[in-house]
Image: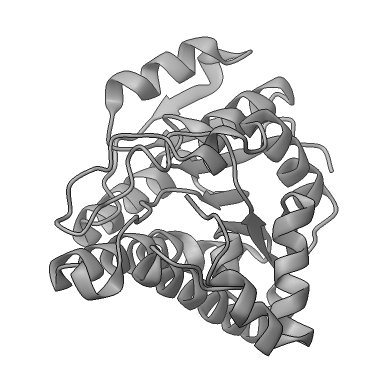
Length: 264
């Protein structure tokens, strides 16, 4: 697929996988629309892109759903179309279920699930009308398996799988491809920014995250999956991929192993 001058909207583009995707698509001469809450960091990413003159900044907090639809409308008005939407924004969790405030559970669902749905719906009708486009959603390995310390985070990611699998079945004949990406541990700020039981940021990086895949490697794999118009891809280490297989084929064994696995 030729990404030259394709309009690519990336949420969560101020760091991590989103930032790496911005650099990857910029090298391919795409027109980038970058969103995140931190406008200063978005501008830093813009200046580091191969073609900053083709990068446009639209600050956005996806937990504020009315704002999402307003920004989506502005983007369509300015660019006319979105060729590729990459839903990457979200927040993680590091807390035990019994100790976690319900407000934290609600926040995770509001941001990760409903926020992503809102972004998608803000441009979905345009893609259907133009009979072309790709919607890419970055979920997680915990969209496939549940692990300790991430109950509502895992729930939000499982919900995204259900939503986008259903959407794919509904619009299969509209020439709009749905890709679900399931990364394993990736060395980003995800664990630093993860919510604890009270909703505060954890503030430290997990050992598993520190030893995770590089965002550049993950972004490269995602771009290849988009190019190939895949429906789902798991980008993870051997351990995480094995866990997915165990959960599917030997669930009782998986349940025993995950209890004692190091996931932070």
